[in-house]
Image (cartoon, rainbow, N blue to C red; front, side, top):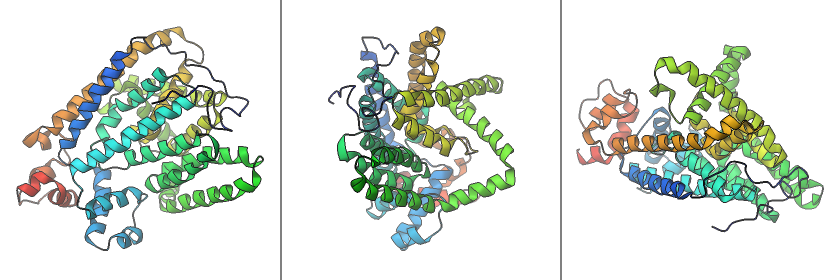
Length: 435
């Protein structure tokens, strides 16, 4: 992987902007960083073992798979584009292609998630180098994403996060490229919107790039700008039902109630991100402390996002657009932040070092080691689930699908999730072998 000079960046967002400052990170990483390489290599082996897991399901996974399965067994693409589906259909289309080709299985699913995740991390790493961060610091930001329990928990699930991660990372990498190549970012950005509505955030830095360059090459960029507006309109239209449901929820709940819920839920998200632990695994007495730290982390993230504008306005606009889409959403799940996680950690660090608090700076190395250790704990637990055999239904999740897994290979179908049961019997090889 070739080191890119800290002065190299995409015009006009970095080098050509007067507020760009090429300065290395002040965070000191030990010179002997072999431990970080060893941690990444060990985690890669543990991740690879997850391809042997039984098919893991949750509410969103059942929703995506059931839609793709119905299309694969009925009228194919006609079913996908005519049948109502609350979420964007890009990921279900990917699952449909795997099913029609006869490749879908838990093994293929996890393998595809790993491919999307690793490619996205590599692209984010290169983007961080282009933004002027040194190699060790960029590696650390990607390693923390790699070893976040959020990544470990979701890598085995048929959900859209990792495909979206790869597409958004590709768009972001292209936006920070040199020359006209950057305008190719429109294609993965448009695909990202068809996978997750959060992809609309990518159009904020794209619009900034187009507006900044419009006066230099108006004849070339006017068609692009028009295409950008049309693509953004198409993305909003594709998610119109989603936005309609959100506005109806706002009308029913009230704006103040919605704001209180959103703040509380996203404080929880950030507490789970920085502690690298799910709140559900902690005793009730620890929850107030946990949420208090999350509120401070959310403040540092918002502060760091604005501070990053001094270094690169395109990064500021990317995080700003992403936050505008996620923060008002009154639901909690730290995986909402997974597609932008390296830059979330970057903004957090920028916010923490704003006043150069020495106490926090001194604690950061110990915190990084603890964070990575907890990531390995999550990987160890996931690996235990993968090879738990008959004990899997008793260990997986919160138990609400236990009866479904237990009856998946039997004839008793009472008191189970019928959609999940159909998926397990069709695509889980343990059940297929037993029938």
